[in-house]
Length: 148
Image 1 (tube, rainbow, N blue to C red):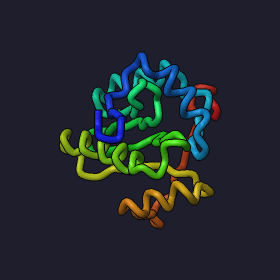
Image 2 (cartoon, rainbow, N blue to C red):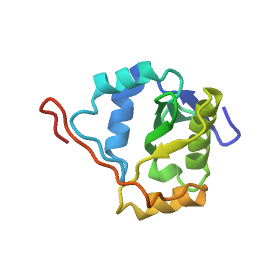
Image 3 (spheres, one colour):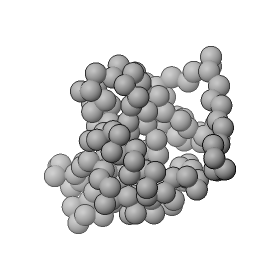
Image 4 (cartoon, rainbow, N blue to C red):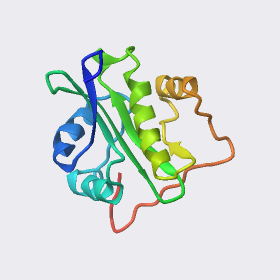
C-alpha cells in the first residue's frame, strides 16, 4: 500500500467483470461487443503480468489499464482513473507501472489509442511526454461478422 492509500496490482482474469463495469462508466473509454470477459481473458493470458489495476485501501477499484505487446511494440488500452481519484498522480503512476512492465520484457516503444475528440486524454498523455503521430492512420476491419 502506498502513502496515499492505494495499491497497484496485476489485473487478473477474475478482475475482468469488475474492470469491465469500471471501464464502461469512465468517459473517454470505448468498449464494443468484442471486448467481453473471454476476449480480454485471452489478451491477459497472451500478456501475463502486463495489465494493472489500482485499488483504494478498502479494495475499491479506482483505476485500470490493459497492457500488452506483440514482441516488438507495447500497447496500452483503456487506461482510466475514477473521476474522484483524479488529480493525485494515479494516472501517471498507472501508465508508468505498465511501461515498466513492458520495459522488463525488452519492449522499447509503446503505442496507445485515444479518441480524437478526447482532448483531456490527449492533453494528459502529451503532458507525460507522449507524442502524436501525424504520419500514421489507424485502419480497422471487423472479422467473422464482428462489428463494433
